[in-house]
Length: 104
Image (cartoon, rainbow, N blue to C red):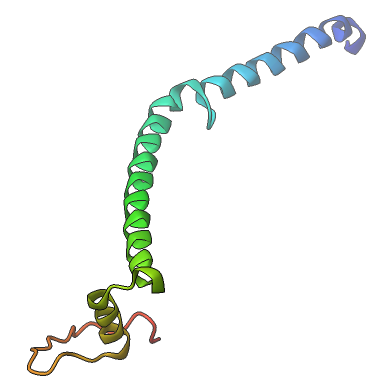
């Protein structure tokens, strides 16, 4: 029985491989039907990138004013007060009741 089917084995094997490749092309992670999902993810990642770029530009500008050649007195006082937990005399301090993120 096996000897009668032997000429058809290469054809059957090629058919199975082609079927597998076609199914993966249509339904796989990078398949035809998942294109819309990838487009949505691309738009989301581009929005996140734009947000991070603006945040970076802001941080770079703030760091520029903390350097000695561009020292801004107001920014330096703000950073010192924030890091040391101090405030101006006569200023009202409103404390945030939420726990610190550094404490476990």
